[in-house]
Image 1 (cartoon, rainbow, N blue to C red):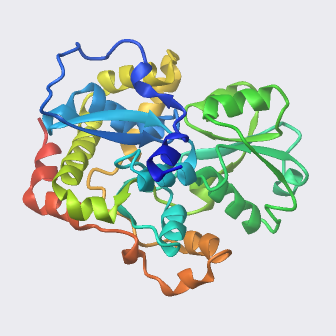
Image 2 (tube, helix red, strand yellow):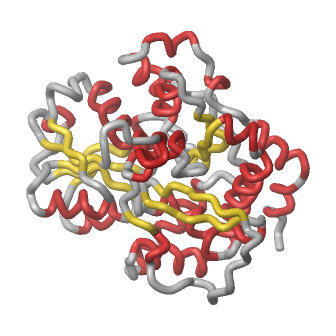
Length: 336
């Protein structure tokens, strides 16, 4: 099986199949360059590519972008390397481990400085040590949630392999359903599903943002792609950054987009999501290279040679720097 085909087996669902459009439909311009972007979960953290798609920002920059839902950083990185995805968020540990194994992944931006992810548990789980012997739902092995909560469990003096059982369960909504059905005792949930879970009576055992420093929602592609087609990578990044600015200045539109992609009309949850991510999304999204101690510790458990490698080996801030120095980002964020 070739790499392209191998990447495709990780595709879970085509987001293009969603009915309707937030903006009026327009005829497709055949001159647009077609690329694919991986959406790593049906959660508000993936809001920006949905905004860029629905507001026709990708088209403005000469791109026809297909948004494809993928499952976890391990599968996402395989799809990028196999050519099935042009770019996508990939957790920093996965980028590091992939590159140590000979891959050429590169992180060119970070969209948020921390992770909106909480571990919701049954009411009887009240202390960290109560998680021993329990079943935890995460998206997949090697995913961001898998990394974060294993790190947090170690931080609290337990062994994340021996002391708990991990179950791979797709989307945040599916993980919440598994918790409600009693299939698991705890679930890694992002907003707004964490708020839904609290309403249903589940407790927040850990808030990842408070437990560990970890930048996320990266823009990752291949170094070969960057070398061979920097122009397309730059147009994709311009679209992404303009999507962030558009999100912050078009609240009603942004909420409508999130409602469509999450298939959720709960206005309280949608409004709270907007307020959270309006603060979180970074307007000038340089890749974050400091505060990565937790990342290095995680990778070093299986690849100790990471200790001798610098973050700069896995990241390239030059594209954001170019857009920053040119005034492109400043103009986007000037008061209208």
